[in-house]
Picture (tube, rainbow, N blue to C red):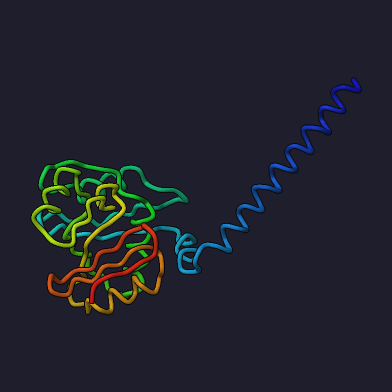
Length: 192
C-alpha cells in the first residue's frame, strides 16, 4: 500500500513538472510569436482566396475552423498551387498559408491573390534556373514554402511593404513582372 502512495506522489510530481514545462513553452512561444500572428491564431475561421493565372482555377478555402486545420481545404490549396507545368502536387507549408492570410487581412481587399507560381517541382525549377535569371537553385518553391503573387487593384509596392513589415520570411519585389515573392525562409529581401 505504501508503494502505491509513493508511486502516486512520484506520478503527481512528474505530471506537475511536465505541465509546468508545457506552460513555460507556451508562454515562451507567445513572447516570440509576432503580435499579428497571435491575433490571427485567435480567429475562429481563417480563409484564403487564390486564383491561379496559369490554370484558371480559383479557390476560397476555409482552411482553419473549429480550432483546427481543415485537411480537405489544405489539400485543395495544395492542388491549386501545384506545379502547373508538370502537374506535381506538394504539401504547402501551413506557415505560408498563414502568412498569406495575414497579408490579405492587412490589405483590407476582398479579391483573391493572383498566383504566378506556387509549388515548383525540382525538374521545373532546374529548367527555370537554366533559362531565367533570378531563379534560385534551391528555391523554397520546391518545398512548398514560397509563392509569387499579386493582388489586382492593389499597389504592388504597398503589398511588398506589408510583407516586409511582417518580418516573417523572404520578400522579393518584381515590379517589371508585376508580382512579389513571399516565403517562410529566413527574413531577407531583394528587388527594387
